[in-house]
Length: 159
Ligand SMILES: [Zn+2]
Ligand SMILES: [Zn+2]
Picture 1 (tube, rainbow, N blue to C red):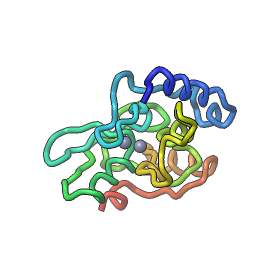
Picture 2 (picture 1 turned 45 degrees about the vertical axis):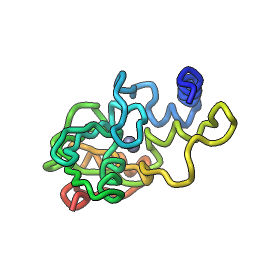
Picture 3 (picture 1 turned 90 degrees about the horizontal axis):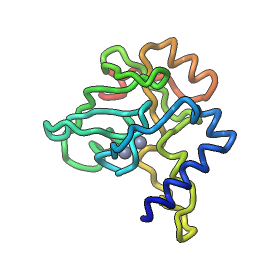
């Protein structure tokens, strides 16, 4: 993949009104960090840290980290989330997740055609439906009122 081209494609996606609604202005990428599983740049407001067979690894979002568990025999334990509203690290205990809202930082950028004009991703996307973490139930519910999706407490999700 041509990195310069694809980065320009991401930037242009950020200029679309829908992406601005999703918070492109306020929300950035964690510089230099790539998801352990899908190699996407890690979005700083959905950064997820998990233990993968006992070793700490950074994932782009909770959905991607949990997908790693479903697709392999490796044990994956999410140990740290990021509060989508503040971009601050968030403990899993007491966290809430909004699943399948209309905001998904991971997939926003993958629908852009690659240099060969074909979509860069197949129809399966491990980050979809998206999962975003929030510090409290009321934050999660407020977000879901605006963007749809189900509010699930993290302990239930991780089970
Ligand atoms: Zn990922
Ligand atoms: Zn993801």
